[in-house]
Each structure stands twice: as structure tokens, then as C-alpha cells.
Amino acid sequence: MIRIEYLQVCFQRRAPVLSIDRLEIERGERVAVIGPSGAGKSTLLRSIKGYIRPTHGKLEVMGANMVTARPEARRTINRRIALIYQQFHLAPRLTVLQNVLCGRLGLTSRWRSLLGLFTPEDVRSAWAAICEVGLQDQVHQRADTLSGGEKQRVAVARAVAQQPSIILADEPVSSLDPAWAEDVLDLIGAVQRHHDATLVMSLHQPHLARRYASRIIGLRHGRVVFDDSPAALTDANLEELYRGDDLIPISSAATAARAS
Image 1 (cartoon, rainbow, N blue to C red):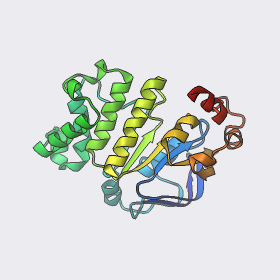
Image 2: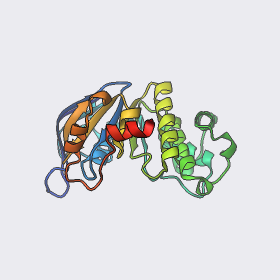
Image 3: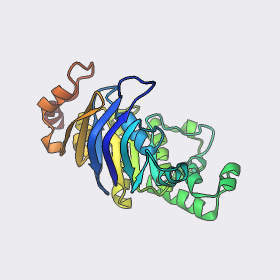
Image 4: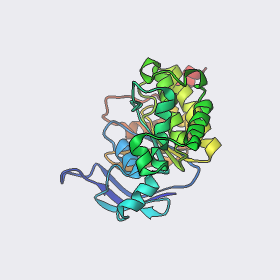
């Protein structure tokens, strides 16, 4: 599904912000990418999405090399990749339905996209996505009147309406309180399983990565320093991963104490 070989991403001829020798993510995996601020988590997700063009190496997504593929091939792949953002990226004055319909823009003709004209199929897909995230009662409510958790539910519905093969979530709960964070991660996991999609999410909280992912990838200075199951992620791994970082991750001991 996603294959990386000797990938580097550099900005303005500076040192690489991402340097990965080899990484593979298979169809249907649920992967959490963790690491300190500036480790390259968002750069990795945005490279997969096609927003960032790698400087060197190979980034193969659904059989196409996103580094060397022609623009039309990249756009075709891009339509099958949904990205959920930290700050929601909703149009505040549009309704829930109108925002979710934006997930259909890449699936309709160019002239319809430009005019904002949607087919009955688009509306049915958007409504189904809204029902899936439980926002039927807010369907005609403006986005700027919603709570943070509800806004992220709209963003998840927009991703579902896109009918993606890959769902990327870039720090999807960093702007939410703990209760809403768990609610949104439960929802994203349910959506991923229901649609048999591949999920790659960057998380700033290792305890959430342990809980919601089946595989954890740790980045430090743009390099992969951990790649294993949540059960294999030890406090020693976390101390090495976040060494010198201002943010102290919640250890397994602290998490267990809270759970009890």
C-alpha cells in the first residue's frame, strides 16, 4: 500500500527534515506515528498525501511512485487519500452538509467542482457519512457553531465521503480535551475498520498511540527509531525517543495508574 525507500525531504537545501531508508505499510494497517515536535511526523503524512514532493528516494503509494509519477497520476492517487487535520480545516460559514460535500469535490467533474454542483449520488454519500459519525441532528448547522469535537466529527465525515483507501490523520486530537480526544479516536478507528482502509495517524500522546494503533512508528530527527507493536513500546524506548524534548510523554506506569 505504502512503500518508502531511501526517502529524503529537504527544504531550501537545508539538512533533511525526513530521512527514511525503508518503511512499508500494508493495506488495512492502523499505524500511529509518534515523536517530539519537529521529528517529521507531519512531513511524512503530507508527503504520502502528495502535498510535499520528496527530494530523493522512492515513495510508492498504491502502486505509483509519487516522486516520479506524472501530475495526473498523482492526482488520481490523491483522490483516494483523505487527510484529517489538527485544526479541522472546515469552512466556518458553511453547514455540516456543505462541508462534508467538499469531500466529494475530487470525485466529480471539474466544471461541477468549480460551480459547487453536486449530484444526487454525492448528496447520498455525504448524508451516509454524516449518519456514520452521528451528526444527523446538526446537518444544517453552521460549522462555526459546533464544539471542537463536533467539528472534528465533521472532518471525519468529509474524509468518509471521499471514499478513501488511505486515511491520514495529522494530530487529529491535539486541539481537543481528553474526553473528546478518545471519542474522536474511537470514531476514526471504527471508520477505518468499517471501510477496510489503511490508517496512518500522527499522535503527540504515546498512551493514545498504544491504545488505538496496532503498530507504532517512532520518529526522531526525521529518522525511524522505533517500529513495532504497541506492546513492544517500553518506557526506555520513550525516553530515548523524546530525549531532550520539553514534552514528557506519559509512561506506561503512569498510564496504568490512571487506568486503575
